[in-house]
Amino acid sequence: MALGAAAACALPVRRTLAQAAVPPSRTVTMAIVGYGARGRQMLPVFLGQPGVRFLAVCDAIGDRRAAAKQAVDAYNGNADCAAYRDFRELLARPDVDALYIATGDRWHARLSIAAMRAGKDVYCEKPIALSIAEGEAVMRAAELYRRIYQGGVQRRNVGNFVTAMKLASSGRLGRIRTVHAGMAGMGRSRANSYLPEQPLPPRDVVDWDMWLGAAPMRPYNEKYLTHFWHTQYDFHGDLTEWGSHTVDLCQLALGRELTAPVRYVPVSEKEVHAFYADGLKMVLRQHGFRDSCAIRLEGDEGWVETDDSGSVYVSDPLLLEGHTIRHESWSRPVAHPAEFIACVRSRLRASAPADALHFSHVACHAATVAYHLNRELRFDLATCTFPGDAEATRRLTRSNRAPWLL
Image 1 (cartoon, rainbow, N blue to C red):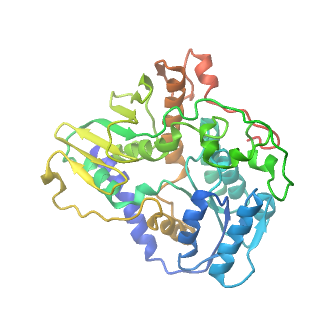
Image 2 (image 1 turned 180 degrees about the horizontal axis):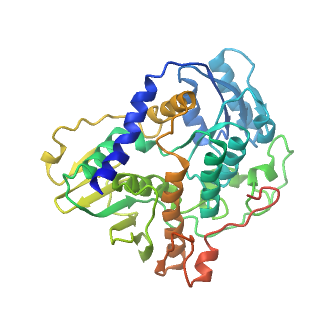
Image 3 (image 1 turned 180 degrees about the vertical axis):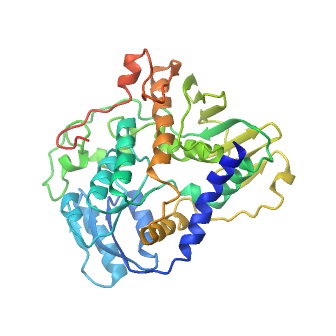
């Protein structure tokens, strides 16, 4: 297990270094879909990558669409950036190599699949999907169309998290018995609350049907366009909010990227326990951490913990001997997008591929169902169901509104 985990943790770093040495053979042309908070945060990072040129932007909200075009035009020093309301028009362009997807969660899977089908490589913010079926479809599309896919789980390439994972896989902690995945806002999007209907704006101002995507139809209210959508289960994945990062990091550190726990036990409103087939325990909890997006890896001979502060905490300072922590912003990272661009050029597999992220999301989706139902559930990885529990199994899927069926 230690050797497998070591390989899993070291591989992304080796790929990044190798790909950085690949001379740019051509300009990578890109487009962005979704210019909300995360898009505004990350577009400058992508614009600043050497040999990258943005040709187009897309958003269902008119003022965001205009703002994205303005940002790209200002960087490029011209007015050539095209702005689209309908992503299908954008994907029809043969001159766009790659797509940066920063929409709300409900669109991530379908946009990724459509882009890869159109021959585009994809960098998609987390979560990669809102259900197990969606995640599997993303994984299959990346395989079928042979596209580069990088999930926006940037902490895989942020130094303090890399250090913690390497320490766990090095054997210095002994055999890992328990891992902890930090969560935030557990239960925030457990249900839906429908706001009063407001007059529907013109389509060029807000394309409400496009904004909703496959989510069930509901009357328009401008508040949905704000961060409020995070509180709505139709648009959000609850434990995938932070689990997309922290459960993923735990699985990477353990060398278990292509599996998931098989038993889920809700403990409280702020904690769920999950168990792998061999008994190793994962604790998904909101409380007791120093900062956001924390992970804690506990072995027979010590523990390591890290979070978004950039600090690395250990049971014994000697555990960090020989480790140099590379610091980088988790909120506006460069290494993760830079690696994606290098992979687009080299055609080498990215460090956060669809298959590995699919399985970390399987764990998040299964944990979410157990948490919402507030009962222990056993999960069958072979069938992706809860055997003998039809109600729980039904909750692993989402309704899809036409024409956005998978």
